[in-house]
Length: 225
Image 1 (cartoon, rainbow, N blue to C red):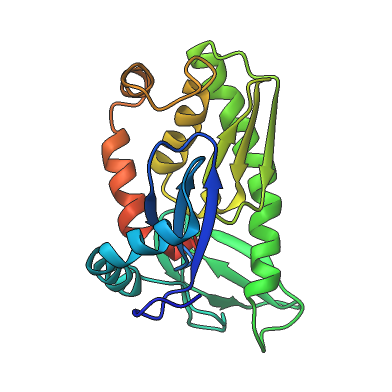
Image 2 (cartoon, rainbow, N blue to C red; image 1 turned 180 degrees about the vertical axis):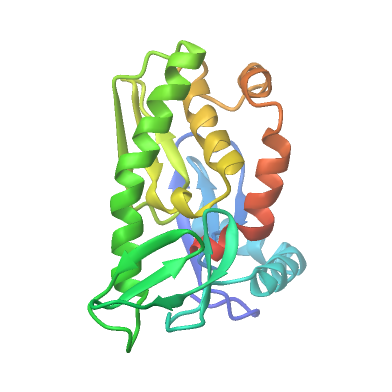
């Protein structure tokens, strides 16, 4: 359905929810959570009661910076934490650079985003697991496996079995932010929740976690999430 603000609204039932909740996803979709004994009609009434909050949340969402849809020469993209212009490099084969990193491309004409993001992903599959294993050894976390995925709504995840999954887009983020996400997921190997004990462990291994969270809230949308 559509609410008055024009935001798409979906209803989700949750066996764990104790009350109605209204959230706005990073893709702009409003989610009304219905507790196990709740009804959709009551959820609709709950949404109407919180229309003002939803309007404000939608306005904040609209102001968040977004990456360019099409990447061509001169487009500014986020790469390793810095906004950097795509520039051509001279040579026999089409090549572009982002800061100190060089990428071969089929052509310097047209949308470079698909081919560059594919190369970002390849680098992420090498660099992110290596860093995760390094931090796991530092913290003594019992990691069994590290994977890099194309998650659309989260930066990382941790399974009870010891698998850490990381979003490939972290390769574009500042090192401190990347490390925070890894520390965050490693901490879940001790606390599979977001309790006070969990955050105390995160703060112990990553004292700058609040600054990293702030960066994600302020600039994480530049990574397309």
